[in-house]
Length: 274
Ligand code: GLY
Ligand code: MN
Ligand code: MN
Image (cartoon, rainbow, N blue to C red; front, side, top):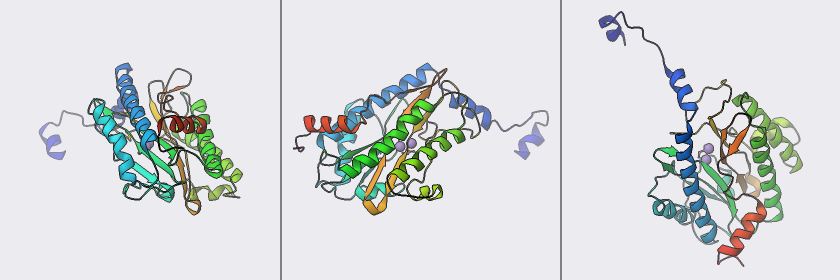
């Protein structure tokens, strides 16, 4: 930099990071169309997972149903290394080994995505390996789902990442109290240790400026989770949304996430489910 300055003293050198980030944060119509395509393929891949998963196979084997579909549907590359985490493995941050056998009664968390023309999707769904949630799994799952849905209703231009995060945290704290996991608010980090979302685009964690207000055309993930190591239950539900003039649109709303829908889909399409 100094050499450059010496040679061209008349040229002003500025850090353009924030300008570029601002440009990248807001997507135009064509960019959003690419992301929609990659979400559509991810949806197909997750359906294949629901159709074929069963107790007794390894996490990496369950993962191949997704891999094979994204290859089939346009040879799309992964956006990042897939997380396929059964039972207690779903409570481990950044679990990527995917080498454990899936047991009957496990919930299996899949955090995955693909990209089309370099625009990524980043989706998480959590499925019961045998096609049926236990009562306790359902309770935990529905609290995470409640937070996911309330956040999508809450998001609109003008809010900041901090307001978004604080809102999600307050919902999850209430849920953890309801589930009998915590008494004091400050204990909630034991069961939830990441933030509620991040910008997506060309990168899975696209650059963003922290205190910037959300604006139309920006995208974020909505990915609450509750991870209970002592019960072997980890649930995360992640959608990708785009901000509009007065709210947001969930681009992955067609990837089913209600307990009833998942159970019905698996009962109908997975021959291992009785
Ligand atoms: N798979 C990375 C994330 O959800 O942020
Ligand atoms: Mn993810
Ligand atoms: Mn994410």
